[in-house]
Image 1 (tube, helix red, strand yellow):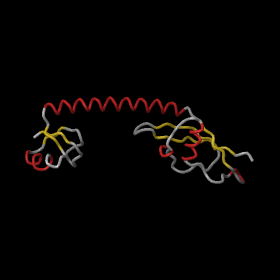
Image 2: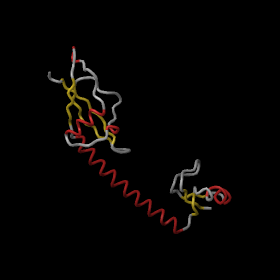
Image 3: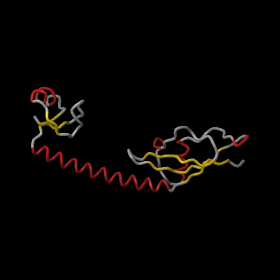
Length: 149
């Protein structure tokens, strides 16, 4: 029996896949629970069309995200912090601070997308990754400078 999966089934497949199963398994388990639908020619054609649409939409989104990543890679921001003896920072620069500095330049970025392993605690330049999508990462330059009294 050929069926189209509507949700992920362990050891069988992912949603949208057309798979062959034994008659009893399909008729008595998968179909009544709504985990699959029978694979008719019409359904398979509709599924193929939906896959093409999804693929095209994903390609368009990836292209837009890449252009935004290229634009963000050109951005450089400066964050000033008070320092003590030996140019040691009081506090640190977090992803929220970076997001606010970007917003001042007119670039909106969610602070949760800024991928800091740990807050910046040193003066100087650091490259900070911003994850825009599954495979798209932009790197911006963040300068941590001394705050003038």
